[in-house]
Image 1 (cartoon, protein in one colour):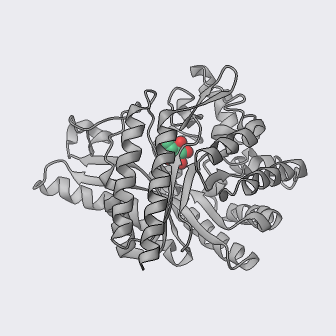
Image 2 (cartoon, protein in one colour):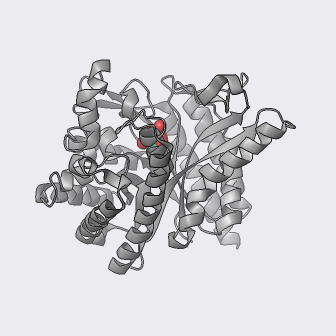
Length: 403
Ligand code: BGC
């Protein structure tokens, strides 16, 4: 029986601290600092990774998702910082010693500033730089790798930075959005073949943000038409382009969206909030059953193993998080029982961390971080998650025995 992966996820820029060579740092200097947001040492995970992984181990995790910060490895074009490679070697070694399997991400929203100054993924010719880097770093770390995510949420990156204009480089151009998506398709496919050439046993995917879209008014033809349009363009367009270059599907699940056509609301015409729905601190609607629907749909369409690479809530009280973990895992294991090929569940996040342009006010962690002194404290949800890991692991072992 293949071991089911249970754990949590983090990304470099959000947790490590001291990432000063990427585009987010420049954005922070120019924009975020005006709102008093400074990444600084963040959670100080860069120094405290050993302690953090020890907590993960105690909490029953056997997998951990992390990203390798390209801007640390190559702070200037063509200049490799070998000390940083050494750092990530130590990070991977620390996980290995604790029997925690790494799932690494090569591009999780942060990119070297020099790469962005050249236009980043907007220019097709720059893709080769990402490929060179990917080959290089994977080549360096290959002995400790198995699961590799090339790109985290390509459409979220494109949407936030090139259509909505909230993230760097703050563009609002539909054609730029389309171009970025197209180039990220190319980047993934290319990286996939190069990395497979290094080791055909690598299991490679992207982390795909899929969402539940439902018409706010069941029989309303426009609501229905827009729902179908969003469902296809957001959830399946990208995957349709790359599904032959995937060894599994990484699924990030957060959003439940009611689609209501109200022309007067201009840009937000599709957004409908369910008054009855529980909401996270970021006002996101909570719908644990959605994961069951998405898992089934992905299985039907692609017949690939699925790893839940992110799922979680911003919740300072930790009450909602406990309910969401319990309910979500019920749906995940219902789907698994019904033969959906699910290979892991990674909660977002192991630690509270920097929520991009929102800074540190939202709390996603199983483990709470005190940003004044970087002390960690385990939240009740982390202990509950541990109990559930034990319960489902036992259940899976029993089922395997019976088969
Ligand atoms: C991203 C994370 C982010 C989380 C919560 C995902 O879209 O991959 O970086 O922190 O959602 O917003």
